[in-house]
Amino acid sequence: MPTDIKHRINALAEKYYPEMVRLRRTIHENPELAFAEFATSALVADTLEKTGLSVKRGVARTGVVASLHGNETGGTPALQATRVVALRSDMDALPIQEATGLPFASKNPGKMHACGHDSHTAIGLGAAMILSELKDEISGEVRFLFQPSEELVPGGAPYMIEEGALDGVSKVFGLHVLSQADAGTVGFCPGEMMASADELYITIKGKSGHGARPHLTVDPIVVTAEVILALQTLISRNLDPFAHGVISICSIHGGFAPNIVPPEIKLIGTLRSMSREWRRFAHERIHEIVNGICYSARAEAEIRIESGYPVLVNDDAETAFADSCARELFGDDRVFRAERLMASEDFAYYLEKVPGTFYRLGIRNEAQGITADIHNDHFTIDESSMKAGAAMQAYLAIRALSQG
Ligand SMILES: [Zn+2]
Ligand SMILES: [Zn+2]
Image 1 (tube, rainbow, N blue to C red):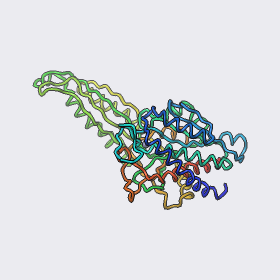
Image 2: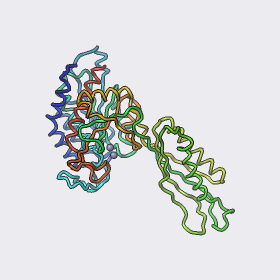
Image 3: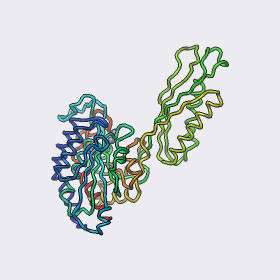
Image 4: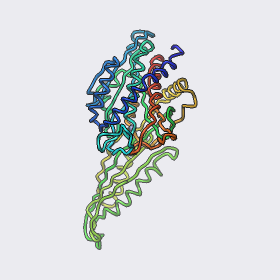
């Protein structure tokens, strides 16, 4: 590994910065929602082809998978063939009306790149451009995954995996913009970083009747009250006090008159956890708690748990590796320890299959008034952060491949 590689990568990130800005603004102006990223996907595929990569279109409907093979011949041919590192970008926008007033604001009413996926896509393309000039330093294959639908369950990632995007891949890296960190910084978090998010749909069925003769009814409202409180013991009595989890019932519907006991009540809620094992246990306990209370009251329950994204677990060794790469590339003062979040992310699916890490890219610039959080209609980024993102992804790929 020549010692000047990090300088070359930082210089190439500067060289391709105007192109990344152009691409990011084009995508930002033309946001497309989950699984409908047709123009974005075409722009990505065309750009990658022009950059000299072999490109597969239409993966997971609107996804793109592209390969860049290196010329570096270190290691045996067998080892060469097995070295594949994947870099992931997500491409979808959100159903939000943009209010930034930027000259390149969304031209599609009610759609906005408010989660930074426009910049993730431009960064992925920037990394491809950088690496295409460094083929002699690449031993193996860098595979670029541009996926649809990060925002909408079931997510694009499981379909990308089903269609072979991870075949032969030994490591995977991805990043997400973070409004709370200054532009150009990167943050890492080993282990569990983001939560699983499951949706709960519970119907409590009783027997309706006159509100003045409750003994002739099975009152689902009283049962529901007990169920909601008992579900809180999932956290207070079924979860290690040092661990994290949330259950919130966020919707109750039922009843229509002051003197009629209704036949049923419908509840909707969310369950979040930071552990794959506890998540399975929590699903079991929800059934036991709800069915147990209903049994004691002679009511019945219908329980549907719609599984969202799994817990995002960063590999400890790969996270330490990426952290050290960032320190080499940018210096210690641009690297921070990222916090865990109860939000969820479908990058978790890739990490269930291969080791890697998902890290944060700071995009904040208080002097320029760039402070709005993601999913906000005023959200934007300090674009100069894309240089750090592309350099980081490119450097991770080269360094990971050189490790074998
Ligand atoms: Zn988002
Ligand atoms: Zn996002």
